[in-house]
Structures are given as C-alpha cells and as structure tokens.
Image (cartoon, rainbow, N blue to C red; front, top):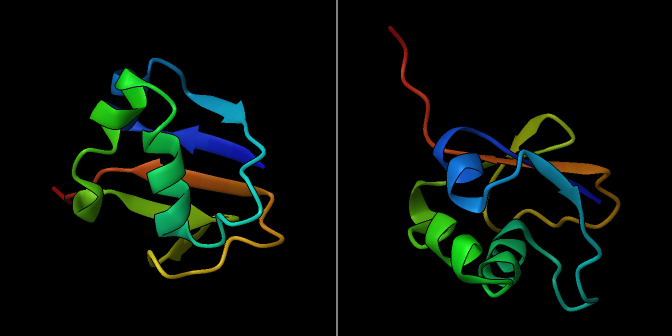
Amino acid sequence: MKVLYFAWVRERIGRADEEVDPPADVTTVAALMDWLAGRGEEYAHAFENRRVIRAALDQAHARPETPIAGAREIAFFPPMTGG
C-alpha cells in the first residue's frame, strides 16, 4: 500500500510517500496510524495527536474506523482551512 504524507505530517516524517506492508492485524485507518507511530521517533512525532490528522483512502475521506483492506493508497494530512 502506498502511504502519502502532506504538510506538517510530511515535514515531521521527512518523506512525502512510501510503500508499506502492515501486519495482518492492522485493519483500520486508526490501527495503521498506531502502527506507523511505532516505526520510529519521527513517525511518533507526526502521529502524536492522531485526533487532528485526517486520512483519505484511495482519494476519499476516511474515518479512523474505516477498514483499509483492499486500499491501494492512503494519505495523511492535517485539517485544512479555507481562505
């Protein structure tokens, strides 16, 4: 699965995207964020306040409880504001 990072999530992790193969027990957006947060200090910093991070599965907004099975791409980004 391809993971994309935007704005300060990307800045904290230090990369814009990567291919990941999470374990079988990682089945939701929230579980993926938890798993990513355990991959190192930069990931832990990026996902330290998971409640503010938004996600999109295959370019459709997804809630934390959304299953990730079959997704080709998931993007993580901070809340957006208009202006």
